Length: 387
Ligand SMILES: Cc1ncc(COP(=O)(O)O)c(C=O)c1O
Image: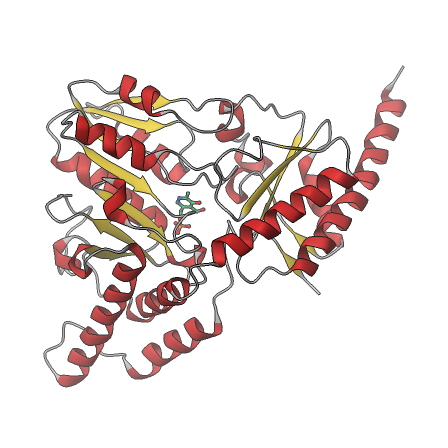
């Protein structure tokens, strides 16, 4: 039996999503822009899906721009806003996903200046530090809702309120890829201008996502063509994918308690690990406001990759930090930002609403065994390397 605890990297699509995608591929193959009846049926399915995504975010359907994944939705929000901006200064939190960080960095050298706001040691940026980074020419600000490596929630709503109170006219973009789905979300309460979500993080298809663009907020399209999606995302619509995303959004909406159940399992996992592995600790204090599905655990003096292999040998699947920051991709900028070096293993166990109590118990036991196994290898190596 597989224990899959890498849901922050990707979630398995739900059977209802697979059925919706199959139906769209089988029966709704016409181009939604075609003038005939089959095209109209495809266009209707697209608008239904838009309504489903809007409902998940408590937004209006015209505010939803379908995209090809979370990275693209973030790029459209961030770079699209930059494309229309007068100012040439951008502020981002230092612990954003590379989708935001590298997009922001791509503007440096093209007349833009970039400020990165460091988090406090608990993995959260403060409202004050974000406000302090703003300049009169700041045109775009990006702060994520939930960090993908350590799960910490960022004070996005408070930042939005502070911006409004200060009368700041800038584009505030929010990456909600790791937040949307498990916890009810109401974009109105965030006082943001745009927000990105990704289908495969909420049991929908990969390569699907959406940008919520507040009515009145404007972004420039990243490319041009047939001007689908209100001119903001040219290209024939990915109808099967977006229908699947819509179905996934509805399934999330119908399960508003999922976050609480997942958080309880996450807490149980952390407790079991901390009880059975005395040297383990939470990467950030457990009392820090966190997304319900991410347990980030630090194992002092142990290498992460062998631990992951030892877990996999026991059919438990997890990540080191983030899936995209394993050793091949260099050290994690998020862990570095909260003062954690490369000497210690940081493992991310990420749950979903399909995770069971038994998964959690199996994972905790497997980690105990993996730590014993790898610690003895490390000890032997150290002994052998002594002169
Ligand atoms: C916080 C965050 N933003 C953006 C992305 C990118 O989303 P996608 O994989 O859909 O491009 C991810 C994916 O890991 C993420 O965790």
